[in-house]
Structure formats: structure tokens, C-alpha cells
Length: 333
Image (cartoon, rainbow, N blue to C red; front, side, top):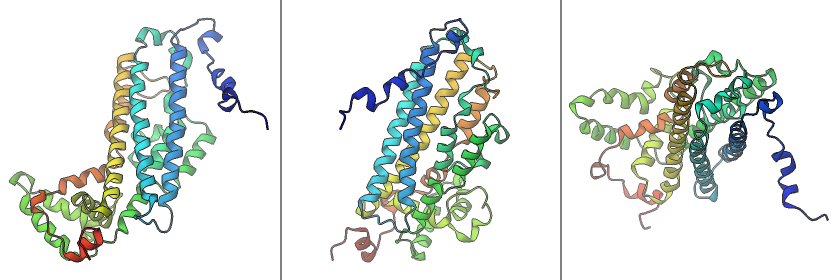
């Protein structure tokens, strides 16, 4: 067997020869174009890794039965944590990009048209796999307009598959602790008692989120079922019980993912404003205005975040009966 060499394993000849400066081809060398290419190539490599991790998580959640007492749930939490670490790195990478001044960018910007980061199909697929719906997208008509026909087909195929958000809903729905209506009747009473005068509208919101009867009032704008929301809130209320610790970390990891994606979009928006002001993007988008819209609209796990609206003080929480505590892992036999 031929000995494996570092450069052969990483295919460095191909990798390091893949930075073709457009400005050099036009005999107008722009020094910062090398930085621009390498940063965007690095983004695409990290997008590939993120998709790899997310697809593996979806593969676990798609199993007919997921035993929450097995290492599988730990694997999901671990890989979500890895995704969040990568997303933090993507945010930090903007600082490197910001070492390029607006005038440095203008040296080669017009040579890029109509290419644009808006054409990154990996990022669009990643958003879709995480659970961002087409109806939720900012400027939906522009969403696929700059892509090749084969790329549009690829994205449609990806969006037709089960998303992480849909599988999260299914997983929460089968939580085994929430069949007792008495618990929710009691919790609703305690929650309503905790509201101040300025929060009385939360009474109807509680029923809209957690009651099957009220679900039909707002079906189009909700991704999590009432049963899934009840399970999510229960996990947030009692995260200290052994069997709920990993589910709680899973929910927290998804909230952090939304936060990191939002932070990346926000930093990207301000970088664009700093670099090109209010000018139109190279791909024809409205530049900063478009990016601001994605910051405001492209929240994927907002319904999980909303559950914190329904928490009450720990000292006022309902006391769980002995049978329930035994199922959760604390009460002695």
C-alpha cells in the first residue's frame, strides 16, 4: 500500500490552486480579492460541515423509535453544540473580512457581477433543513431568482424532505409524561395568577399555544403542535430531573443556533452597510435592506423561545406526584 501523504490526503494541490483572481485575469490586480475569495470558500466548507452534522441529526430523529435513555440523544446534543461552535466561528470570520476597506472592495467589486453570496445554495439548503419555510422567507420572489435551474431543483428536493423542526415536533409529541390533563389545568391556573395587569392578553395566548381546541385559530403560523409545546414547556420547567436533562440541553442548543444565525446575519448586514452603504448587491438584491429583512424574519425556533413566556417562579411550580417523580428518575422505589 502506498504511504499516505498529508498534501495528498487533503488534496492541497487542488485546494490551494482554486483561488483564481478575476482582477488578475483583467490585468488589474486587486490585492484584497485573495482575502475575499478565501473567506467565502471557507464559509462554503463550513456550510458543508454544518449540513453534514444537521443531516446526521435528522437521520437519528427520523428513526421510528428514539430511546431518550440511549447515547443517541447525547449524540444529537453533542452535534448541535458542534454546529453552534462552527456558527460562532463564522461570526468571528466577519472581523477578518472587515479588514478590507470599502475602497479595497471597489478595486474588484464590479468584476463580480452578477455573482453574489445570495447564490450560496448550501446556505439556503441549510436553512431549509433546519426548518425555515418558504412562506417565512424575506422577499420570496427573489429567493431562487439568481440560481441555475439545476440548483433550484436541488433546493426543491432538499425542502421536500423532513426538516429538523418537523422532527423535533414529532419527538416532543411522543414525550411520555404529559397525558395527565390535571397537571395542565393546575398549571394554567397558576400561570394566569402570575400575570400582571399589563399581561392579561397572555391568558388567551396560553390557550392558543397549548390547547388543541384553540389550535385551529392560527394553524398557518405555527410549526409546533400544542402537544409538542406542552412537552417543551414541561422540559423547561423541570430540567433538573435526570431524564429531562438531555432534552433540555437539546432545546437550549436549538435556541443558541437561532441566536448564532441571527448574530451572523446581523453582523453581515452591518458589514455590507459599512462596505457599500445603500447600494444594490452584486447579485441584484437590495443589499443592506434585504439583509435586514432576513434578520427580522428568518427565525426558525422562535416557538421554542416563546415558551419562556409561560414559565412561573420555581417556588410556585406544581408538586409532581410520586409516580411522576419515579418516571422522571428521582423518587426511590
